[in-house]
Length: 438
Image 1 (cartoon, helix red, strand yellow):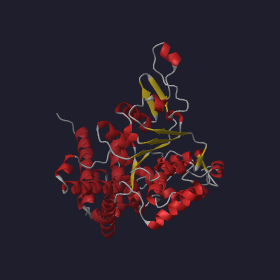
Image 2 (cartoon, helix red, strand yellow):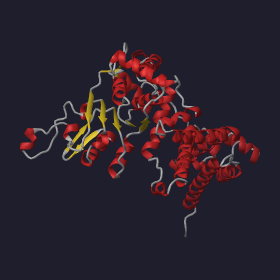
Image 3 (cartoon, helix red, strand yellow):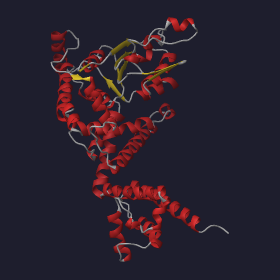
């Protein structure tokens, strides 16, 4: 980070400002801590959020109070209905273009040119409009007829009283990376606190004493997405691999639960799309950032429940907790995380050999900039009685190392099997080149 960039962006101060903003919203919107945390995760990672609830629980107040914590961002708000056409969201038709037979929207003041958006009762919109929203929400691009235009959208929060499941709405739901269900609060103490806020502010959002610029939020988002030139947060290879194991196990637990449910539940399995799965790494960086770290840790994976569960549904949260606690205990007890790191370093070696086959013309233990070099040398000394193995023993070194490797868990065993296959391909291809058929 350059000195100028460091002066312009003080990460510690930004973290404090974001924490203050979260605290302010929590004081204004009572007993919605998990949902508020989830909405800020959506903002930090540049994603969209969906809130489902019955009427009158304060979805609009919550959304507007969250957006009000930031300055210099355009805000678009709409109440969806079946009668609306896409121009409600994308702007009215350009009359001059229409005269020459072109359908082009004038996007000024529309969702297309707004950084923040709130769509209330989104499933009341017709399927034609919802389909038109898909590319706008995901690719941040208006694609409608001949018109293609980049959108300014950073985060859209949508609200609904019900879910309407169809091919179109299922695709739309996948665009809303963060989802929650908010239940009416019947606790007398919480109701008293809500009434106190209403008596002071009349149920309206309040301008906070201190706000965060949208430019600052955008820089944090770049950090979380791994595209910032001023700060990088590292996700170690073994943490990335472990994260995918946890997600897969959670998906299995959810599907087991569905299989044990009613016959109707069997008609639809629980599915985490690859699009959503990769978003986990943006959130992991956001979690590390908010804790003042530049490296993601294993404990950060526990907090991914705000992404992969519907916040507010206790059974989903319980399934995520079971997945993380089971695997965390298993990996810590067996030192499987260290084994993952070793095998993934070994994978880096195999990837290097695939990309540069000429490296096999020298002893593998002599290859520079190889993370597993020391490990292989120590094993070669133990297995062969020498630190540097001759070229003709490269294959034996690799295959025997993997063969004698003792996986601590099924997941590590699965990874080892994949690496054994890769090693087999690499050396067989080399042998076929060196020994052509006659």
